Length: 502
Image 1 (cartoon, rainbow, N blue to C red):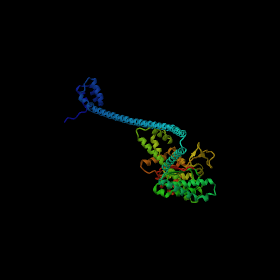
Image 2 (cartoon, rainbow, N blue to C red; image 1 turned 180 degrees about the vertical axis):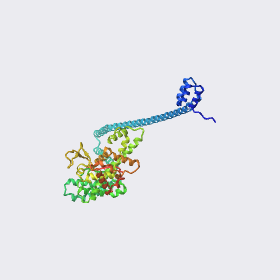
Image 3 (cartoon, helix red, strand yellow; image 1 turned 90 degrees about the horizontal axis):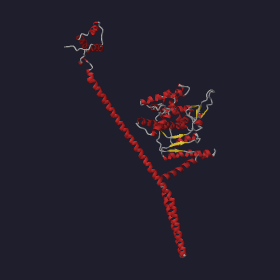
Image 4 (spheres, helix red, strand yellow; image 1 turned 30 degrees about the vertical axis):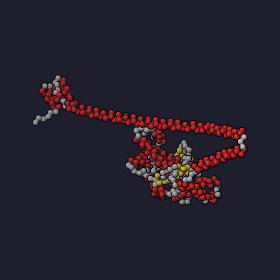
């Protein structure tokens, strides 16, 4: 069986056949020539290399055409995909255009109907004037004819009296029909009347205690006690915002009892009522029971923290939907620009925005609020609604009493408590000092784990000058007061918002 020769061996054999001395001398000297060098020498000696010797014959006749066919198929697929995307884009643009035109036409129809109604209302006074003049002239002519024809006085008197009687009866009937239509026989009014009577009875009880004080606090206390009662009696889940009324701690505790707001129930059911205080009671520190003081503080702060977290999570869900969308409306783009500014994200990096737009664990927020505000009794918390002790150098703030001479910082001041909670969450979600906090929170998200306070407290060493000692205190507050029980708490779904104005 013949041994298959390589392409190089075949070229050497061809050189020996044609007696190419140059190649023979190289082989005698045992110098290895490359295949390309042998080909050049043969071509220089005008020796034709047979085609069957070329190893690239298969490559030229089979491999290259197949690869060329593959690339053509790929190009064809890409073109089809581009055509498909163009078609989808056109369909969607056509859809947006048609909806815009339909909305515009509906708006024009609505405006036209409004103009017709407005013109009709303008006609009514003129029509009334015309009718009034017509009947006035008619009655004047009638009375003049009666007078001119000298009809019997008794008959004229009877006609006039009959006319006024008919007019009076007609007026009474119309007024009675209107009163009947306006009167509501539904049981809701009866219930509200009963509620008002009950509330009046309840309010009369604390009057003897208040008489010792000035009359103004008495009025305020009536408002405080009455409106939460209305919320409870209606049995609907409402959002109650209690304004700046200088509430006393006893009043606040009584309010919590009236609305059945108990932390034990919140821990079990994981639901909290949306009751938002705008400030802490100034006499909170006068409570003798430390446990009652802490519970009152937690009841005030917990709804504020949960409400801000739910708002952030709603924004996060909206951002997810926008990222998945191919096309966004002008309103959605404006919302994105606003959120990029709010979370201080540069270069429109939506991935970074998603990293920052996330909730703060409830246990951490409550623990830091308790630590920084002295459980709602510090001067900054009472005078400036500053729960978290954030520093400022240019904004409105309260100067610390024991501040070093070389420092000029202040504690940031807020109009209401919820504004302090919002600023605190924005601080943790945007400041470079808490980047590790955000990264570790994202890691928990990626592993589908619950975001818990005790898993993230070690990343907050930069929040205070004491560093790791500060995180140790936070862990102690969370553990001792069982704040981890509030991690999954949500707001009771509100039907409508009730603002208790002063």
